[in-house]
Length: 173
Image (cartoon, rainbow, N blue to C red; front, side, top):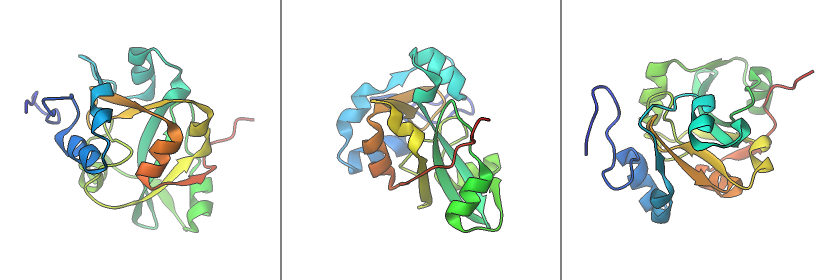
């Protein structure tokens, strides 16, 4: 394993975060590690990731942590869209939904913002996946650090994340 200052350690065989690589192997998805793409520059935002990969922004799967009445929830959203907090609140029957702070994201998932994968987290959380992800044959998600992404068929990604399909993206007028 190597580290680069404050960056997350890399799994030597794939470029993925070791926790994520282990979770992938435990799920029987070891072949996924061979499809990981690594980048010398961080791809912390969906736009940076799409530019580095050469795909549409909407083909990026963002993994975002929110707090719904104090309970953490992961929302998987396409990179071109924003999460509508009211729709998440309605979906969960919560009174208040807020975006989690960076330290809470790391504590909950085990990963830093910009590298949170859709599964393989430190703690079990409820997962919502926006239906917009299903518009693509393949989406790209973080592999546990801001320098690595992996491709996966959206329905498969939703299944492995244990997500419920919902409509929680902001609607454009």
